Length: 101
Image 1 (cartoon, rainbow, N blue to C red):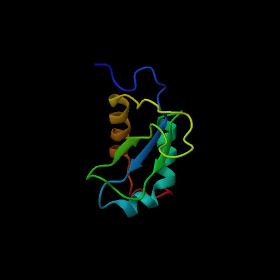
Image 2: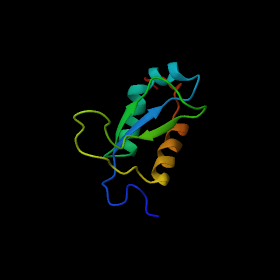
Image 3: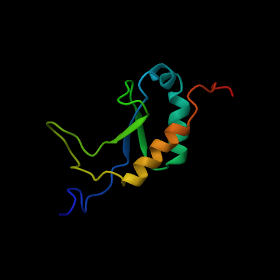
Image 4: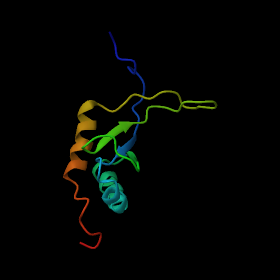
């Protein structure tokens, strides 16, 4: 059985969720984290969520728009390897580091 997204262009929009219990540190580091992710993964757009989903930072690709007036159709998610690479970069990022360090 072929995947539902076969032949569709890949989305470059990723929503990043903070680890549960670290939402405040995540919020304080949002600018640094966004810059870090954009530098590490050029061509991708990251939206940083306010609430966590799991104990670890997590990502969900935005593969389309639901609702009236949706345009552009459905996009394929990035590969599982790419998503795990982004999650690994999140895990290695130091949320507590001062912006001036």
